[in-house]
View 1 (cartoon, rainbow, N blue to C red):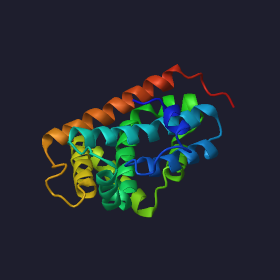
View 2: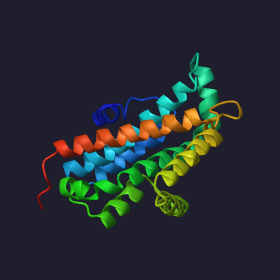
View 3: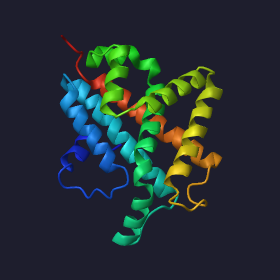
Length: 204
């Protein structure tokens, strides 16, 4: 996973035709301005960068790479309005997999569960529909392993529907793509937990 500071350093330089970066960098600015301590800021920034890098890798694995500026630009124009939904869906899966780490998150950032959810929704720009969708996912994931696979089937469908650029053969809803998302989000959560464990405990 790209270190969270790398993307922040590009905020004023990057070309906004990067697939997810135009939305993610707004979230990183929110993390920077709305966090009340360094660990909290790092936590949210790592999550944002994970979504940016994870979706980028997912597209690359599906051979959605572009030869030349205009090819990339045309694709970006078709999917731009759908990017926030895809990023937030990826982040929601991350948050669900972090459910067992509430104590660690609180220990390192000072946020209890209620504050975590509130700040998450603010920083990552969740609207009412996003919150309803997350609550639906929460009910599904309570089924156990079957529920976890179901939420990743849903994420797979969201990626296909919103990132295919009008070409149905792009990003097919295959088991391979679902498993790629399971692996990537799981890896992001594992690395985030390792980073949290390295941080000093929060002291008020």
